[in-house]
Structure formats: C-alpha cells, structure tokens
Image 1 (cartoon, rainbow, N blue to C red):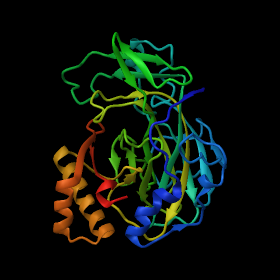
Image 2: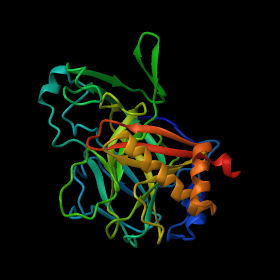
Image 3: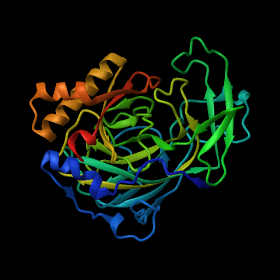
Amino acid sequence: MVAGRVMVAGRVSAGVSLLSLVLALGCAPDGGTDSAAEVPGGEEGGPPTPEPQHTLTADQTHNRWSRTIPPILTVESGAVIEAYLEEASDRQLTPESTVEDLATLSFDPIHPLTGPVFVEGAEPGDLLAVTLHEIELGEWGWVANVPGFGFLADRFPDPYLRVFEFEPGDTSVGFAPGIRIPLRPFPGVMGVAPDTDSMLVTIPPRQNGGNMDDRDLVEGTTVYFPVLVEGALFSMGDPHIAQGDGEVGGTAIEGPLRVVYELEVIKGAGPIPSPHYETDEFYAVTGFAPTIDEAARNAVEAMIDYLVRSRDLSRQEAYQLASMAGDLKISEVVDVPNMLVAMRISKDVFGN
C-alpha cells in the first residue's frame, strides 16, 4: 500500500538530535547507538536512514490511552522500528467512499494507534526521544467535513468528502484548477501511556502527547515525551498527508503512512508538562489547555523553563528572550476539550 516517498525536513540523526537536550539537562541517553551513522544508503545530502530492527503492521493497533493496554513489542533503548499506520477512520472510509458514507461514520474506532511499544529501562522521570527518520505516504487519502465537528461546525453543517489518489514520487496534489496542496506527511497522534487504568479517548492532546496534530512533527524531527509509566508504552497513528496549522476543518488529508522511527531513553530528564520537539533549525515546546489563551500561556512557560535549564538564564532573561526570538503558533483548535499551541526558537539564536 506504500507508494511515493516525500522528504519533508532535513534529517537529524538520533545522536545529533539529542545533543541539545542532553547538554541542557546534564543527562545522557540510556543504551542505543547513533545507528544512522552505521548503515549505508539514505537520502543524498543527509544522513542515511537506519535499518529497521522491528516491523509493526497496520492491524497491530489500539485506540485508547491506558497503562493497562499490553505492549505488542518490547525493545531496548536505541531500537529502530518500522510501523505501518492505518488511516484515522480505521477503514470505515475507503478510496471508493462517497459523502453518504459520512452519515454512518462512528467516532468510537477513530485513531487506530500502532503499538504500544515497551522500551526497556524507561521509567517515570525519564524522557523518551522519538526520532522520525523516514515517512512514506500510501496510495490514497481523504478530507471531510463531518457535521458537528470542526472549528466552525455551526457554520458548516453539511457533509463534505474528497478522496485523493497518490502516485510514487508525488510531492503535491491538485485540489482545484490552479490550486495544488504540498504534501507534508506526519503522524497526527504520538504518545506514551498515561498513568491511569482508565481507557482515555484519543481525541485531545494531553501531557502524554496524544492527538497533537502539529504539522511540524515531520521526517527529521525528534519529539520528547515524558515517561509516565514503566516502559513508556509508545504508540503512533492518525497519519496526515497534508494539514494546515490549526486543522480548522477537523481533518487533514487523512491516509495510511509507513514510518521508520527510533526510540531513545534519556534518564532523569523529566518530567515535562507536555512534549518538546526539535529539528536542525529550531527547538520547540508545546502547551495544551481548553482555550487558546491558556494553551499559549502554557507554551510560553514551557519555553521559559527550557531556556532557564539549557542556557543558564534567569527567568526574567528567559521571558525576554522568548519575547524577542520565540515564535508562537497554533497547532490545532479542534481536538476538544484541549487545544495545542507550540512555541519555537531558532537555533541560530544560539549560534548552532
């Protein structure tokens, strides 16, 4: 089902990606190696893709968050995993679907997540670094207006469905005459298990990550999650092929993906209130809350905390640096009850 491959960001090897956090927090990754440097091949102009050691199929899924969900795979820190992700409706929609099929769409199976993966040595108080080495899109995708769902649900009550087909090598797709949408695939949901026996729905973002729908979590990005239970129990899903910041209509172009990712435990580096992430170009933090105002405040506070720890600044200095050089962005506004805001700072500010 996998077709074209889309490069969406400069690659970051696991060792390079972890460097700023390791230096900032005075800790080190547990186990694993910079396997990207050991495997031949890869994209021209960037480090090679590490060879996957494990493969997870699109039917090895769950669609709730809980520490009680048993892992389907146990790995050491540094493991590289190839995961096939099912589209968000869990096959309720197909390439042959029509707008009439939205009338029977159930939210109960929404977000099949491939996993969980138990990472040996991961304990509460650690961070789990997830490096997205490679992302490949599948042969099709869909976007929809589901009545009652979306940022402007009261103004757009009518159903809408559009199905797209992709060919190998596609980097954009036509939408209307003279309009093409760049393809920038990423997993909309990534996260670790929360410390609860309850079976939490996957719709909102939380401390464990979850449905962040942040379009910058693309190939070449490393995401840092707080480990909340032994083994972390990492999962990903809700694959997106193209999405704008905010995901205002409620969906992106939803479609299957293949993702090669690496898991690395950073001992004693947590907790953090919500995930951080970085690329070669910037470091970013996130904040979630029921309103944009609260989510933005939480993101700014997270950036201040990061700058204090990583750059030996006072809180006042960090606050002013965030004001002068930090960029706030709305990641999503539709995943009730929480919205997600990210704040990034360019690494050029730090001379690296």
